[in-house]
Length: 370
Image (cartoon, rainbow, N blue to C red; front, side, top):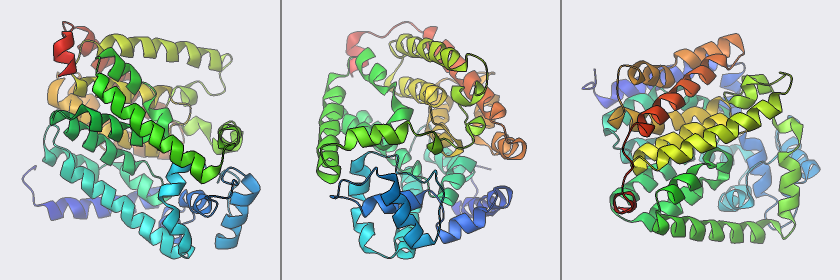
């Protein structure tokens, strides 16, 4: 099976794209028309330098002008540097800009498959092409596939012994920072000070770009956007603790308590693991505890499960990896309008990998910093 020519897997990917498009309401229209999450990104690129990046009326006005309508949830929820980097798209008509953006997404997927070698490139190719979250991200114009490239580059830099640049590449994941809230625990817990320096340096540059692109008051506008409930449509479909306890009495307190528990477990686990294994721990922990996690964010399961498959395989992890990477649980999610199946798999994965890590003898400081 693994020896099949690459074009068979490309054909499988194309087939899976249209299968998911059929399952996902208006999927084909979303892909072909660009009436998806790209709309607020394009609108934000037109506001670079104006101070209106987080003005809902401005964003909705641009979207209405370009598409003749929109969705109230179409607000710009990324940091300003993200729009600044994509600013050249604002000079193109919407359809042309969307075509370029879609090409960039596809290029990011291909780049990840080329760069990722854990446990082998073949693994990355097969499970990336079969990943419904990856396909879903392309269908809906989400930018999560770009995270795959930054993670792959960070791992390659770390393997070359260039921890500073590994930190810089991890800092680039800040356009979806809520999914990486536990990465600092990994860096500090393993005393990777050069990586920390790279992350801080990269973060400082991104912050400087953000202030230049959106003005001095953008943090307040960004806060108001992130706390606007319209950006969280259908919270019962979230594949995290928020989705699991949505509508439950005392659900927010339960989420907070479990989030702190997961943070503590991550801290203990990363101090006993290699960098790669620790990265898998904090990625899965971040998926669980992030307040905003939908199907597209589960593209991160591809690198996380690849790491697990390379060093943590036992009789329990094999079926969990299969469930997390193959389309089954995501088809259940679409068919039942409930995230319970995905939540269960992610929770079991987290418990399994942290238990594996906690059974290990702690590494010495010299080993951790290598």
